[in-house]
Image 1 (tube, rainbow, N blue to C red):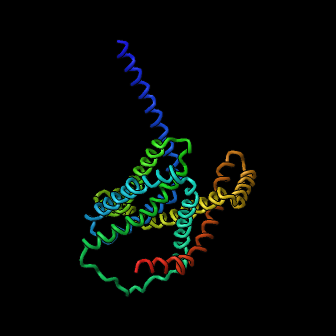
Image 2: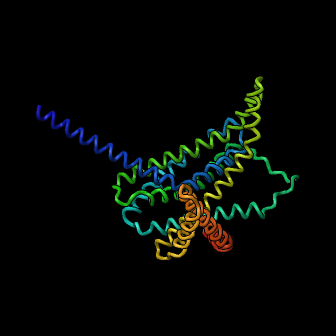
Length: 318
């Protein structure tokens, strides 16, 4: 009997330890995932274009293929790499985060520059209609997975940096895995809903009930607005997150002025409003300042990428 009681006591202790560890994992994953908002929104805004031009029957399978590739990127490639980095070269975390932040700033600034200065092709210019849709689908999926790899690397790096340093290796790995699965499900679940929303709207618009028809027409008309809104919000979030990464990275490396200046500016702005709004105003000013710096840094990077990095990449591909 005493042996059985001892065993039950050990089981209870193990269950308590497991529950505590799971709580640590969920807590770390939640904190880490909240910092990746900019990349997630942009990912959800970009991905639907890869299913554009295909029959409705192929849209969901294409999204599922990309989602599967995204999970492979995160869990099979990036998660082990992040664990090795955390274990053997944690000093590389800040430079790598800043490299990813620079990419976000460049992407955001390039989208703004493209929107302002890009001239659409003439209306009579017709694109060639591909004949091999299977090959085109595979090409689109490969391109989407390559783009996802870059965004996933940034997500995992940001998430890893937000997990407390005192967390065990198991908690870090489990938290990153949870972030990877949750974000992939959220992004590609949202993408699936987005690309099918107009079909749902058309179906509802054919209903005999006037109220249902109105909802269907609203969904169809609202899709372009939703996509444009997602693009704008995603671009702004990329600049905010990218700028914030650069500012904090410089602070970590000993260049304190951008970080300190923004902090003082936000505190001054918060001091001029009622106490209940102070936190919101401080966050908004900080985010806006980070976003402006992110935009400026991205604009600097555009000619660097076009004139230096682009030709270098072209040389290596030959």
